Length: 304
Image (cartoon, rainbow, N blue to C red):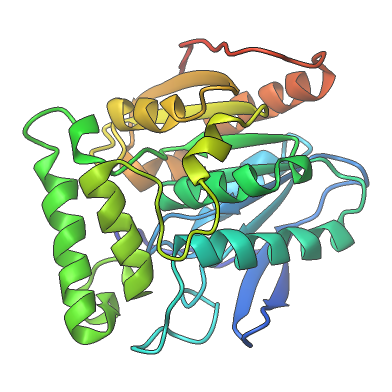
């Protein structure tokens, strides 16, 4: 979801890649390369947030010796084409087509680099689907302001906001053939399947996207990757309870749970992300040197 942030230019230090999908769609990827062999953080953004908006976060991560890549979600930002009534992609297609294609293209740019997938908001939800299918592709998972939209994970009565909001978006998308967020001023133009998956998860809390061909919840529960998950102060769209509920699906993972207390909101943290970037840099260093892990764990550290 988006708080309609202002968008700075992609900026110096990054290179632009175009990843072409089998159906001809083109994904724009902004890549901040690091020295050979350094870890690579692949960022999947929130709904309605352009890749270039993450430049302050990407440069903060790069300052800690990490490679960074941020992708515009299919049909949004610099990725083409814009969705219309013929668009039939949702969570499942993004996890099975888009994510693998982007990671494969980045491996060509950064061979030998351990890959950490970072999801913001809906990007975290989609990233977990990809990780569940391709755990061997990743060295770990990072979640920042990424929670379930399930309405019961929100403190009453605020759960009505994701419940009614997502389902209103899905209803309009069914009538129009796509979500006209570019006209209505929320979340950009989106596939009706994508927002339908989002609304279904808000109603049920279940990971059952349209077209699913595997039991995603079982695969997510079986993941044995290290996970670092942040909630952010003042975030009404992914409050701590919603982040906790998403992490609870990772029953077999080594989850480190942290809260960034500064009240920056769902997207505001990106512009003041150095504390989170520093914590990520430290955690990645530890994850790469830690011995193999075989059971659940975690902590509740505060980050300031």
